[in-house]
Image (cartoon, rainbow, N blue to C red; front, side):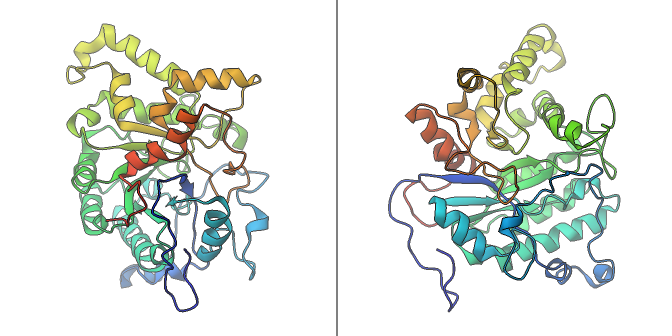
Length: 370
């Protein structure tokens, strides 16, 4: 359903049930001017100035075979994403998470960060989402300016293809703190999910990416993303965000999921003896996680024995909590044809599309987004 030469979007989605939703596709702009054009005049000369990742991936991040015909970076040809990824794999909906280098939580200037978020959102709704009606989008916000972020959520949140608000993984303080709650109130009001995605961990004004401090190299940083996610999730649960906003759905993307069973067990165990510290949690913490939080499959866990992965899926209640993600066009992504391990038919259906449909309130009968 990519646009034809006249700019029309063919109505080719069949009136049938969903089969596959991709939770993580990284589209980007070919030239910074695509974003800069939407900045207010006072920031035009600054362009895009954001903290760089401190840890170099020796294999790069992007699949070089997905470069555009004119040599631009993979993900910058929006039509190519539709034609060569969505069409090839019969993807019904694809969540666009953008360029994760756009780590607004690590930027010191709150006003500039908020205007960058607005500029990105303008580019998304004006220049990207109209390209294909299978695209669903993630709003960008500046977490350091939560009241202004809430205004952006209300301004753009009624667009039918906007389905979530994206937060960078790293921040100055954990995301459960009440200072962030205006964003959550606005997202719940607009029926949008909140999502957390890596890249700002340990650079700019964010905290070190591990409890032990700054890693030495990329392999440490990438391996320990799950630990950072544990910190954010523990904050969101124990601070009462999921109680205050019971209809607010959360996604944790590209941080793994093998750590989840241990995390829920430990949090539940501690809650039994320490519930006086969190009296607002009337149920055990894992209850709120299973009701309100989903985890993306990429990077898929790879234990030595396949049956161990089956046990992970069972222990984390994957039929309720796991969603498929390709991480396209990153070289270490998980292609839909081979990226998911074998699972029973009921669980596979949940992971491939049912859980995502619930998370993002997607129509399951092929009808238009509203």
